[in-house]
Length: 313
Ligand SMILES: Cc1cc2nc3c(=O)[nH]c(=O)nc-3n(C[C@H](O)[C@H](O)[C@H](O)COP(=O)(O)O)c2cc1C
Image 1 (spheres, rainbow, N blue to C red):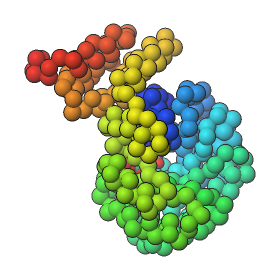
Image 2: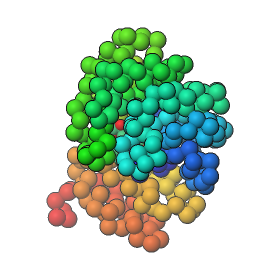
Image 3: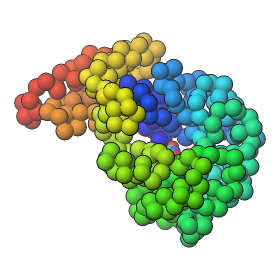
């Protein structure tokens, strides 16, 4: 998720669960080819399994970027066919590719040819006035050889809605995604969009192979501490232990020149609902952006969690 699932966010999430597949922000193929690769693609080995999401619509460039990503050690390359932003539309990729299934097919074929790791597609069910029952099926049928589709189960309205509205306003159609799975039992179909709880996730998992959580995972990351136990037959994680490990990570990254706020901003929702959470957030918001802010700021913020919320109001 752009601006959200950067390497620091992913590190925090990984410390909370071992098994969920994590995704990078979308990076354009052109940026991968021409940009500062260490900055755009670098990640911590502990983040595995981690997928690199690419944006683009040009088979050769996507193939080259996929190869670079595979060489960096990513576990999967994912093609974005769902982003509705204007910037992406002017580059003719993202969600508007729902209108060009043959081009998507060429892109994924070129990417698959270039790498030996899985190449997957994240798509919408359609755009604008498309009939989702047709557009989603057409896209999937076109992408012969691609066996995993992550479907954000709503249309994107490219005219008239902002990217944010496009994540909430077009209605969700989970039934269509369930039907796609029934019709294509050999495909791995992952459902995304509006999944608000693990109970909901569990219900979807009776119909599809996987679920992807976006905003809920970012805004309330502590829920991830239960993912291994609930879905992977593993053990729950302790949020406290994850935070201790993240403190070590933050301390090391500070010595590499990473600003404190670049890491602590992903923690703001971590203690939601717990006494002191508001003071924790406020302390970080007010202090972590200051020049030279160090690990002490994070420790002071954490100390608020042991005090009563009303003390400082
Ligand atoms: C801030 C933000 C950035 C996003 N960036 C991306 C992105 O780079 N690539 C992508 O495929 N989806 C992106 N999305 C969409 C999410 O991946 C997801 O499809 C959408 O939020 C619906 O899932 P949810 O209801 O679980 O959040 C973004 C969402 C948000 C809120």
